[in-house]
Amino acid sequence: MTSVISRLALPLAFATGLGLCGGAAVFAGSARTDLTPKDQERVAKVTAPATTFDKAEPFERMSGGATTTTRTIDTNIFSHSSANLSFEGEEQFKLGNGIFKKVWVSAPSSTQASDGLGPLYNQRSCQRCHLKDGRGRPPLHTGDLPGGLLLRLSVPPATDEERADLASKKTLRIPEPTYGGQLQTFAVPGLRSEGQITVDHESHDVTLAGGETVTLTRPIYGVSDLGYGEMAPDALISPRLANPMIGLGLLEAIHPADILAHADPDDADGDGISGRPSMVRDPETGEMVLGRFGWKASTPSIRVQSAEAFSGDIGISTPVVTDAFGECSIAQQHCLDMPSGVQPDLGEVEAPDPVLPLVTFYAQNLAVPARRDVDDPEVLKGKAMFHAAGCPACHVPKFVTSRDAEHPEQRFQLIWPYTDMLLHDMGEGLADGRPVGDASGTEWRTAPLWGIGLTEVANGNTFYLHDGRARTLLEAVLWHGGEAQASRDAVVAMSPDERAALLRFLESL
Image (cartoon, rainbow, N blue to C red; front, side, top):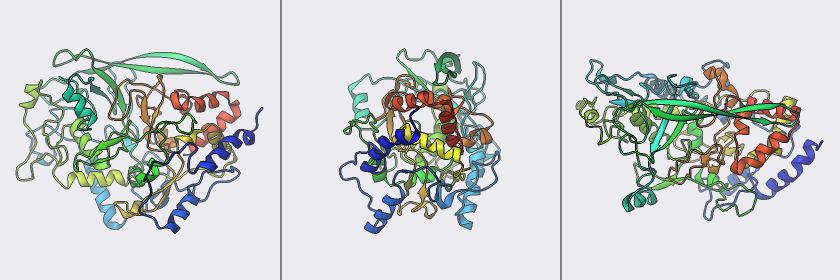
């Protein structure tokens, strides 16, 4: 059997020669502007790839740097604040948490601070999608109400104007003409919902070295009980499972140059990894910026992500997305005629300031839990296997955040998110066939891995990938294709003991 050391020799030598990540091609002009030369030298040293696996790296346990929570591991493990928050920051965090959990009601209502729901919506609060600030839960069968999964909708461009809007990033997708950008499965009293989610499944087996067989099951999502007529025949439908909320502020604080430094869109080095940045237009400034959030990195900031979720998922308007009717389309006049929750004495939107800033601050400061068992020999062996399989080419282990980050808590922290924040072609097995901005129908942003081993503790279940198809971490790995095919195949070829160690490492994250 090939030894771990010999397997690691080539990828580690390759990575050491190129910098932070084997295959990283630095974009012209991408350089950190927040660091002195001395700081840059320190950052390069501390973020260099691991080359030995006999002990944990310095500070590896503290996944989120000084923000890391070391609180007791229980169902609230994803719901703690950054450990280095000030007293005033804790107050803001708690206020934001209250709004995050708030259950909105339809207008008009005696509870004027909480009305404005819908008229069409997917959930009545943020917390009902991001269960315990963790992952959503997909429907297990038709008729099973999802807890944090929705269907995105769009159609291919049909006119020169639509193609121009996509090219200029005025929009990242063309909404379905009747049902808009996502299917709304609930509606306020007096209005029909847009429809319901259907799900079927198909399975196939994968045989691993050592004789183990794993059954992979793919959900096939559709729609039924449409309330406003037929959907366009060329409609593109893609499921989206709510992502964990931890560490978002730290991901936002990574300097753009460090993300761009890993991009290699033309695979100039020939390693098969072609990470691409997702460039989007900031709706508040109009500027082209790096997309960081969402399954296809289509959103530039936590503030914008929060505002779009308020509008699309709950039907609540904010200063960023001001339409009080959420996803009501021009083909749904009855929806547009429903009362809104705008209170003129409070402002021009249903959730005026400080609602959005507080929820944004809350999302920015949900702490990443500390790693477990970083010195355990089995975990260290699994870490070696993770590197041997080439996983760090996309799941980049560590960064040092910007000194210029918005909030002091996130500034200049060594963090371990295990993502490059870039788009990668994951192959036809994971394809949704629905382009969004720079992301093609086979491309997805590399999902951060920190906290992934605590999914079952926080959420009481394990559903991974964009549609919740993977029920275990091994299944999630086996669905990888495209640029990740070689890494996936390396895991298949591992001995049972090596594979068990790899999973033990992932569970420690």
